[in-house]
Amino acid sequence: MNPTPTLTGQAALVTGSDSGIGKGVALELAAAGAKVIINYAHNHDAADATVAEIKAAGGEAIAIQADVSHEEEVKAMFAQMFETYGTIDILVNNAGLQKDSKFVDMTLADWNTVISINLTGQFLCSREAAKEFIRRGVVQDRSRAAGKIICMSSVHEVIPWAGHVNYAASKGGISMFMKSIAQELAPHKIRVVGIGPGAIQTPINKAAWDTPEALEKLLTLIPYNRIGKPNDIGKLAAWLASDQADYITGTTIFMDGGMTLYPGFADNG
Ligand code: NAD
Image (cartoon, rainbow, N blue to C red; front, top):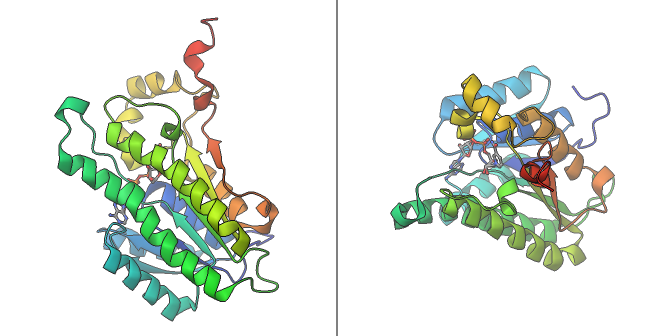
């Protein structure tokens, strides 16, 4: 476990944490001392495996199934969390997916699915968390903030992405959603921060790294010349949720090996 736990006694909910980045975040929050809800959409076995991994390392976690785009399921998940851990201190809005196609071929169903899960899901979960943060307020000796919300965005919050218009629109939306609620909730001592990952090795982008040719092409977009790992993002999330980051709110931290430096311009001046 983390030798200097910074989240001891705090209750965290990480949406979509049976896989990829969310799992990496859940493991790091637990290592920092938080009790963690492992939310998942469908894969019960993977959620159980994440809970087991946290417990094996001496941490505390339970799994809760809920589709973050369904209001009643989100409310039921929060009710179960409050029953189990009493409250919430940290929400990580991580659940997300892609439904890619050329713009002119994009169906309304694929547009709606991506916006509902990636953007509306963050709205539904943040609203429930914010209500509880405001009701409870700051707890002495636990955290300087009444609550922390971390919104998983993407480099596609700022980099346009042809063939992925629904996904890029959802991430651009998260940026203004995050900033606007940060502005509204700051007087309540609630911090809201975005994380903008670059290419992180997870199932969502397997086609971009699972052959040497694909990886080589991907690395041309990453000046630092390596693909990111879920625990890179996990460690950032644990730090952002801690009091070490108490003066950060309303901004996105990009963690991308330099992808947002537009490397295509490096030798085109
Ligand atoms: P992943 O496919 O491994 O994980 C996605 C997670 O979302 C899964 O745990 C899944 O259960 C969950 N999920 C999907 N639909 C859900 C729903 N309706 N309700 C609840 N949970 C649901 O992919 P990942 O790469 O770990 O992606 C996690 C987040 O990181 C996403 O928001 C994604 O947009 C973002 N992101 C990923 C990358 C990357 O390179 N991997 C880069 C930038 C941003």
